[in-house]
Image (cartoon, rainbow, N blue to C red; front, side, top):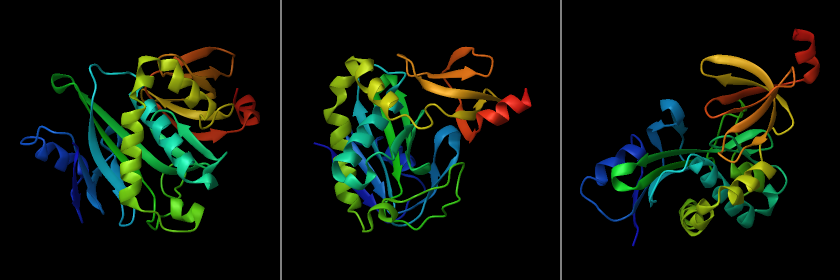
Length: 245
């Protein structure tokens, strides 16, 4: 039985999860109304104002999966679409770990595998009822409340997302099942982008995701490559690419 822990304020749900797990063996969820020092990808600050959904939980898994963050994105995407019809057609999965609505960030995912415990620690942040700066971050931000026009239950949504991630784990035995879904709903597919790659910035067309969860891109000379780490910085026009050559 999974235990739920809720706090009005924390430094981060990930940090509190690690503190609690020192004395608790059973699966847990740590949720906070706000985080002072939320942890994002590459230790970036994860802004967590009041009203949003910020939580960390664990999932037992025999081995790590290279595309696990995309699996979580697949589960979140399916769950949100099942709950909110307003999201249809504009909700996308950004490689590797974000949820995007109409080119604006709706949520983020952070996954860490602990081999000794055969457990993934999963941090999820969603802009639900919080007031946000629409110009925040690379692509700006949006909240569920802005989209659907009313407050959502963070408690219910938290439980629904966890149940979705737990119940769909059979998909992890076949990468194609969820990676095909991610490809169909991939943010930026067919668009030219500036992509940060190992400290370098390149310009390429976003093609899709390969069977290992890497991002397939096409450079301006027609070369196809797969990248396993990096991030999409912004989008550019093909016309600009040709002018820069």
